[in-house]
Length: 478
Image: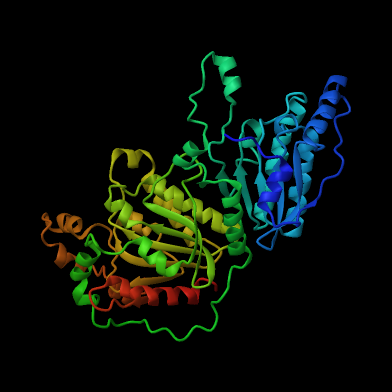
C-alpha cells in the first residue's frame, strides 16, 4: 500500500480545482488533557500541518456542491478525539441544513486512546448526525482509505449509502496490531483488505481517488438532477394487441419457449438500451453478495432511479436467486427511500433457489419483505416483466404502480411443468396448463396486472426494448 495521502492532497485529487472552502475553526481540546498529551497534539500539528485529525469543508465535484469530511492520518494516525468528533458533527449538521451531499474519506485507527471513553462515545453522536442527514433525503458516500479501522470504521466510515475502498486498504474493526497483542497470533492478512470486503459485498467498489472522483460526479448528478427529459414524449405505440411476433393469449407456450432459449438477451442487453448512465452497487452491505440480482443507481429515459434487476445470465450460469439476492434488492429499495428516488425493477427469473440453505436463509421472509417495501415505496415504482417470471422470486419485484411487459413475457406461481405435476400428476401437460392459468403478458394485461405490453416483432425478443424504455419514461418521474 502506498503512503497515505495528506488531507490536503486527497482533497485536491477529489474536488474541482480551487473549489475547497474550509469550515474548520480552532479545535477546543479537553480541559483535563495532560501535559504529555498536549505536547503530542503540538507535535502532531507540526508533523501534519493540520490542527486536528479531520478536515471538513465545502467544495464542488463536477461542478456540483458537496461537503467533504477527510481524515488527516498524519495527525495521530487520524484518531478521533472529542474535538475531531465535534468537528465532524458540526460539518454534517451544516451540510444537512444546506441540503448538500457528503463525501467522507476516513483514514484512521479509530478512537483516540489518549482521551479514552469520552472520545469513544462520540461515535454515537457522529452516527446520529449522519442518520439525520439521510433522513433529509441527502446522499452520504464514503471512500475508505488505508487504513480505516476501529470506531471510525464502526461509525462514519461504515455508514455510506455508496462505499468505495482504496486498493489494498486495511479496512476492518479490530486492528491487526491489537489482535496480535491480545491473542498472540496474526489475524489473517487477507480478511481485512478492501478486495475481500468487496468480494463479500461490504463495499461497492475498490477504487483510487481518481476513479472515485469520476463516479461521485456521476452519482451526485443522478441524485441532484432526478429528471432530465421525461416530459413531452409522443403518444405510446404499445398497447393491447400484438403485432407479428411472439405474444397473444393463444401463443403463450411459444413465449415460454422463447424466454427459455439460451441465446435470449438478458439484463445486460436490456440495460445497454435503457440505462446510458449506470452506477452498480455491490452486495447487501452486510457480508453477502449474489450476482443473480443487480442493484444500481441509473438514469433511464431521462429519469434517475434505483434499478433492481434479475439477471437471467447469472442464473443460467448456476447462480440461483436466493435470500441474499433479495436482501440486495431490499438494500436498493432502502436506498431509494432514503434518497427519495423512484424504483425500476426488472423481473426475469426461472425461479428462486430451492434448497435447505435458502430456506434457512429466510427466502420466504425476504420475498415478503420485498413485497412490503416495494408496495409501500413513497415514490414512483415501475416494473418491467422482461421474460420469465417464475414463482415468489419474480413476484417479489413485480407489484409496482406501473407494470410494463414484453409481449413474450409471463408470470406464474410455479414453472408450468411444476404446476402440471400438482394439477395432473405429470409434467407433460405444462403447455395446456400455461394457457388455462393465463400466465402470458396479454392475459395479465387483460386482468389489469400488467398495464402495458410492448410487442415483440418477429423472433427477436429485444425488438420490444425501445418501446419498453419509452413507456418507462412516462411513469418513472411522475
